[in-house]
Image (tube, rainbow, N blue to C red; front, side, top):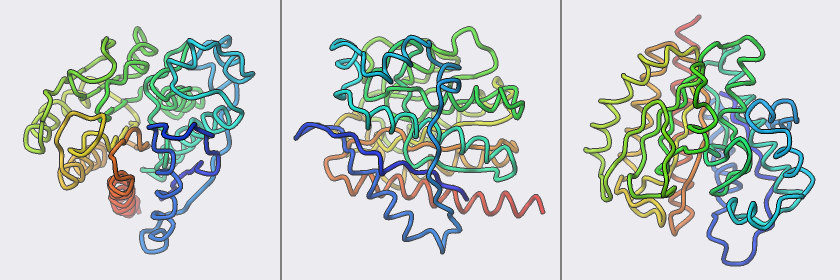
Length: 307
């Protein structure tokens, strides 16, 4: 299974910044150690170019973000100071989801971005640590290549994919399914195709029951040729920003539900890591790594079934 990474392009953040940038290099190291046994090929993605980004974003925003012309209000929404590294990393992260979804559609069946899931980015501005919306950039990339007509976004980050919902509103070719905390960021939610709001303290059983109830509806209504799964680590009970109460076992069960459903429906699948803000970064890496290893196991089974 191909796993695309961009940990070399690290944002220079102020001391005590709450975004856990270190998780990406640590995840890469963990996956690299398991790569041979897990059948994982680590690949550095090329950056998304302007043409790819402008399928999801306005040319003006892409230009201003790339040239360092975002104003203070723009940067407050994003939550990062501007730097060349911020743009390079954001382009590479979008490029990774593009490459993962294209690989999945070209016969790999499942591929992974070890970053990505930047679902708060709108067409004309970034927000919530998200500069470019890699999921929609990737969906429209494979559509432009003629590899897929319809794409399903399965967003299981703890925060609603508000940027995703806003960008694809009125676009029936991309179906936005988000299952998230009702009282979490963003304060004002955007209407997606299917939004499932969960109460504070929601645990494994309640969460998995909701997923089992709503994922089949999303699959049926989307009529998709491919899917993108945002496998956020932030529904974890120790997450500082999550407000839900899933265990690591519960998150692994969540991943299994999504993977099994996509394999069963013969949906090529790209997976991104999305959010994770546990106080101990090792917990975030544990959750993300478990997602990657589970995906690799399912990918081997899916490809073998085609032979």
